[in-house]
Length: 340
Image 1: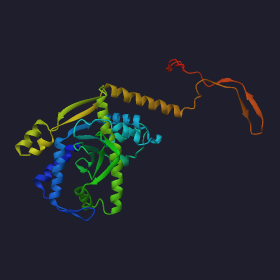
Image 2: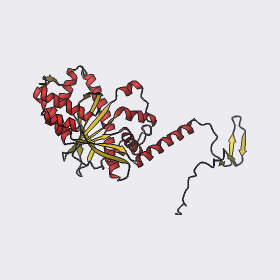
Image 3: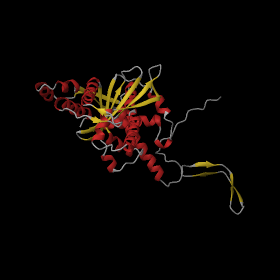
Image 4: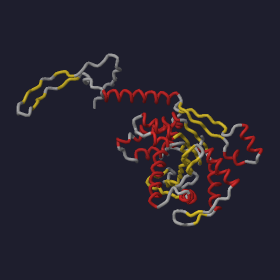
């Protein structure tokens, strides 16, 4: 399943065949059927103008590991400004960009890297995830998150993250706001998924956490591209097969060919593969070291005094301690120290 195709087909079908029923939003204000139709048209228009990038699971895992190299592991508790300062200097190549990946596979890879642990039940609720970056305004960068909940069912973006831009045109992460999407929230309320204000607040906090944390992968994609190395490989393909495009034209479904033009698939290149291989080897080594009870590598212990509980003091002479290093292990080479 490709999420952006599912969204386009669903909304396109709605516009052709359905007259939406008016609803009420979280504030009790009426959302008209015309407003709903305008929302569908707006999403389709944005998708048709966006550059579509689909990350395979290795590419998403690689970009996420690059983010961790900068941001640090969760237990290191680095300030958010570390990754924010890095991200704000990354150039987005287009005004509208769609980034999509398999969220379940990414979290399985995170578990394998020791970043987190998730039960099978939690993993089963994760599917394709898509981010729409809107950089058309000179005053703000907007980001929306769309999430699949089954093969052909998805949750439209319920909130838009708006990040103000500083005078140099870069995003200012200290000045952000959230814009509720009335039509989406009204639909969730009508479906009984947001029965009260408490559930709406919980839903917002969860969505906010997902969007702000995961959108960094999109920025890392363009940081990797800018490096001009063989980290990633891209291939542009038509979103519709020849027969699908012919059928769409035959039955007058012009919106299908206009929206579902082409997408770019992203896979890791030789440098990315080497990075992931080295990462797996390092993790195996660290786990083996943590589980090992072997004596430390041979080293000198300086002369010192040992004080016992009964008050006795013993002087311990300088001596070697530990096991000699294996000749098979690579030795770290340290260059000459520069005298001050």
